[in-house]
Length: 323
Image (cartoon, rainbow, N blue to C red):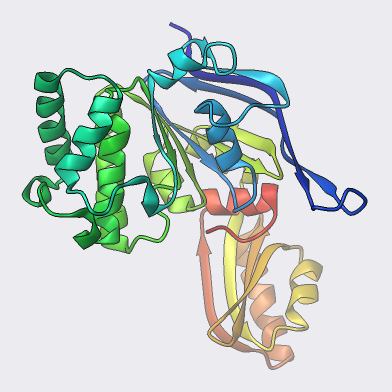
């Protein structure tokens, strides 16, 4: 059957700066290889600026790669772009992909006609999609009166109007409140259950872990790890994660390293410093740590031990705090 999405050695560069002698080249994609199985949900996980959106735009034929190749639904994104476009749905970030002064129904009807869907079939599909995304009661209300979450659900319905084989979702829950994000994730699960392939980009670790059959972690334009979420967690090894919240942690970082821990992130939270540490023997490590913290009169505000998460893997491989 092949793959729904394939890419090999994809490279994309941007020239930044107006003056030639001050211009610099940024490599947004640096040799990306990708294979997405049919009927699966594949997440591309990475921070802002990692290259996620650039990759989606190439796969959706909105950008040309500088080198390498990609196929979607079996068609080359450069040489067979029209065939790709007829087989994909795309939901990019931003609310302005909808017409605010039209109703939800009219938006979907308009896009159905752009695809040349016969009127009888278009009416059936619009009605069905509004029900799927939970907007049937708001079908004839102007989009300008929708909440942000409702607009995003309508975005997804628009991406499905042509009954695509592959749906490309770029940060579909960014900026949404928890309830709205949960509703969008529920819709995404239903889409995959119906047999479609979904390529999802996100920087939300919990979202990738919750939804995905496979996850690729991308950093600085390169995929640094790929596989099922549980397999990726094994990259941390048999180690445990200790999260220590302490006031005045200037001396604590060196102490943690001296005791044999590997500090993978340090963030400020509520006036305290939060250290996330990988350790192989948590019990003996905590015993020694508490003794040393008492000795230096450190003010402990929290201490937690848990198994590694996808976020821990991301921080270890890509460096930096996850979203």
